[in-house]
Length: 465
Image (cartoon, rainbow, N blue to C red; front, side):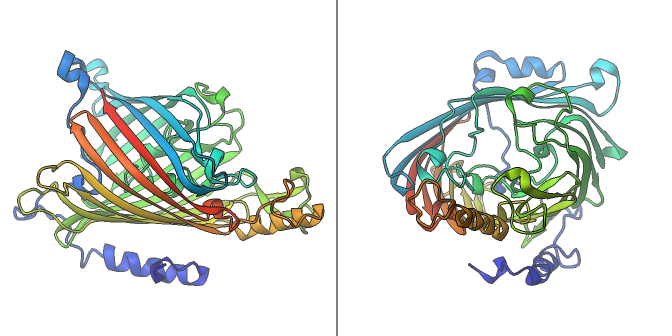
């Protein structure tokens, strides 16, 4: 791995200082200044392209009719198929399929109530087919998974409320406030798109904290975004930390039953232009006062007991996440074609998190061929390093059980690091249909040395209704 991704804790502050000092320093960054010769910031090549069209509007004109009442929506269907070609924990060949329907909507309140710059926002997700190639074939089920071949697998076939909240902006749009049933993806860690089918390459790394949840899981809270300058936005909030939020009983619940404490996220997001091209850079810290269970130490301060109830608990833990997404090239005749580079890093409190750190690097190219200007070609590589505390705990359990043979069902595997990769090509078949064949490589799946490297082929499809 490049030295930029050094895992030595004492060198991390220097590394981050170099990354953000060079890339984000306003004295050297070419930020948009309102000059006529600098085009507006455009994140299309970074993966943030607006929907180009949808099926229902073309057939029925539904979207235009609802817009007259201030109602905007995005209704889509996503499917993900994965097939293990070679290797893995279980080498028997199998294809797994999952899919989901999602409805995300915004209802403007200005026309209905007279409240300016206000809206109700909502999200509903229906997931089907509880099939997960990672747990059935790729990784040792005795240690759980540290990645997914199908990132939209959520552990259940279920319909959930992802969020439902009130939003209003103030100060000419500089201040944005949300309150209600929230989800992190509405505000935080949104500099990298979720386009890869492999979870470790999908978006940023803040979800690896294990204290808040992605996309279709809601929890109470309130957030603030303040645009300090045209390029720099500060984000914060106060959210419920509830381990019960992903459960089936919480799918539509507005109760706080199961809450353990609060989440306090702090993030700085910089949208700028380096090399005359758009880029996004961010640095975030997530703090929680909720009780955490030490993965190794027991109540006495020594190694933990075999009974999980015997492990020590503590309060106040953190998670650091950072990254950038920078356009590198553009076509002279089309600003929406070109190459971009994205990097992300998550650093965890390994006393209670099974991960020490996770990092990913990805190249994306929009419009690789003149005849296919809206297609995408992308390659990403991710590394996950396991927590030393969790490894020590697993080793202690083996000593307690007197087990040394990995093939013994009672053996607790000792996770280390894994390196996974994915290559995809996305065909924009129509403005509302995308087909994305892909190849994945799994190096030491789950971080277990005894599990053979694996190859997976897959197909991701998206339909925008």
